[in-house]
Amino acid sequence: MDRGRRVADKVAEMLAWLASWRFSQKLPAMIAAAALIAGSAVGVVAERLATDHLRTALQDKLIALMETRRAALDAVRLSMERDLQFLIIDPQLTRALSAFVAGWSDFPSSEAGDQLRRLYVENNPHPPNRRSLLEQASDPSVYSIAHGRYHRWFKERAATYGYQDLMIIVPDGRVVYSVTKSGYFATTLGSGNDSRLARLHQLLQTNTSQLT
Image (cartoon, rainbow, N blue to C red; front, side, top):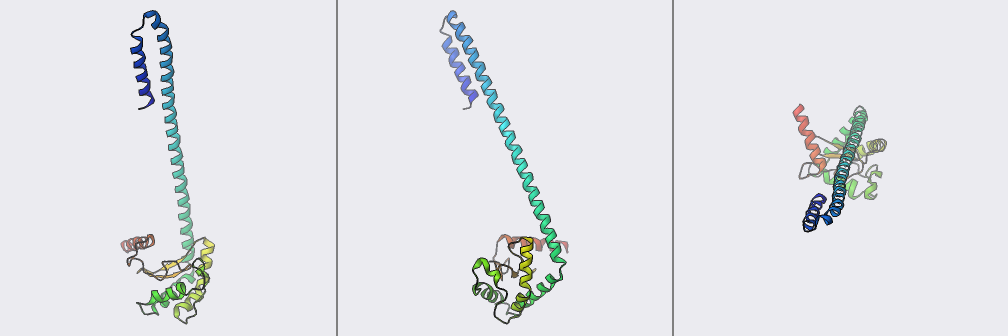
């Protein structure tokens, strides 16, 4: 029950109470009641105006917050697009991509992922949050030779652009490289993997196939 309803109930009670009085008694009481009713009505109007003002102010703040966040997201998107353009035109990226794919293919297809995770995750001498410190595993594989040649380049680019990780994901979903050797490294997106990265990869693949 809101304040307006409570005031109306009180007024009805006062009128019923005054009905049993003599006129000489009613007049002062009616004047006092009129003042009370007027004051209550002003209070109800003021309360509603204050509520409307608060609601409007809150809506304005929410709109301003949404605009600020949208502007921030646009800035991040533009920054990432610029970073990607710089990476794409660097021939080192093309050479690294070819080398890591060749290194993956050098292992038996059914064992490549497990072998790479054993070399760069399970047997990594550094703690999980510092796996990127391993420049090259001790094995003589084609992959490890490529890793020793290109890992530092990717690590420097990640630091320069402020990214936590940089990964190479080939069209079939294989994550053939990761700076930090994250949980995605040496896995195949889409093979029972319903992560956000897997969904993003699927979306990109779908859009690319529609364009071609």
